[in-house]
Length: 221
Image (cartoon, rainbow, N blue to C red):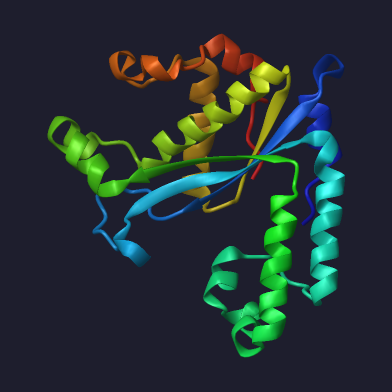
């Protein structure tokens, strides 16, 4: 279902102020206790990242996406995992090297020309466990709690400097996971930063009041 940009822009634009839209997707397992299943290169992580876009640029960005798909006869979503693996709807990238090479180059050029900030947070699971297991044990946070706070706050600082608000869009995962994201978002609006002030002060965490001014109340899934 297409995103109703006008609906969300109207929620964000209070008193005529322009807005940002932050689109996030995750990668990896968020639970710190699961056995490690390193991906290529031996990395074992949870990542949350995406693009921070100006609301007034959304129509042009959607048009660029549609043009890209039209040039290559693509009718399915551009799932990066399928594209990289050359599987399912994108198996032709491997079976037709010339067409695949042309598409991948066009895809890269299209992405690189988008007017966007790239926002991401990656949590290294073995390092996280080595640092916090002895102190917190089974009370260690899910990795998504750390990643969501950091990624959204990075975007919020950009929005705050630009005098804009943010609508956060997160890919739907499941009822439990989506409820966790809603809780993290609410905490950013109602609580001060829950990171240790002794170790986080150099990152200049935003105050609750600043978050409340910048973030639209609920994330969109």
